[in-house]
Length: 309
Image (tube, rainbow, N blue to C red):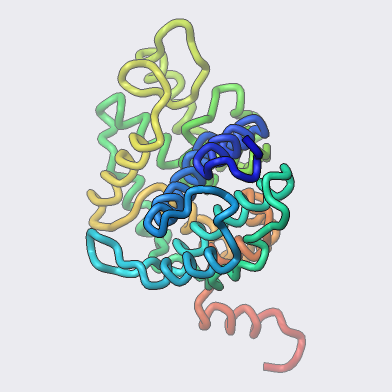
């Protein structure tokens, strides 16, 4: 069969396999596959089954469809961010198809992605609210000590849920107060400072709790579950969410990430330093995670600008 005439689904399977070979994370491959599947399902309605049937006009019509689409569960339209992610997956697919010689032109090259306003999260913890959440675990229980260590780590380091799940004992330098994040988002390593209080709780967990949980052979994963293996991302989300709710607040793991970044910025940290801690490739992304209210900006300006106030 001529490659140009191959069914779309066969070529999509090849594309997703190529992403895996190129060491994309399983989560990225899964999400891209899902967004592309949505496109394939839409294509089947007008009976677009082969790659030769796809034109720039086809993709323009799909982008219009996404703008008009209403979710079945709540009848709400797709957000510009959701539209952007779905169209970006299609752009990446057709760019690959063109480079592999399956198409004569990159038919998706002219897709206009919706503009996304990168705003700070609506909810950011105050220092008092963060402390309230940290105080919720029952420290008379072994799991309470473990959970306090997890919460302290998230708050102190602003690392992602995926990154705390993947932490190993050898990633922790107690003497230097540094965590090594291996293969974080984008498959990049980085060093992240961790505060003394968080280190004390981790040390307490390592001394009193982890030996009770670990099963041989020891995987060296830092935070363990009831069966002696590492925690899943969903388990960490549920765990953190429970304590946030107990404190009378709403949110989960990313709440600590957003809040730590914002509080550090308000405390005078340089945004480029926060960028390195968060592991952002783009400074623009970091600025979207952080916000300082207008009063704070005016106060900093008054104290630091050389002109008379």
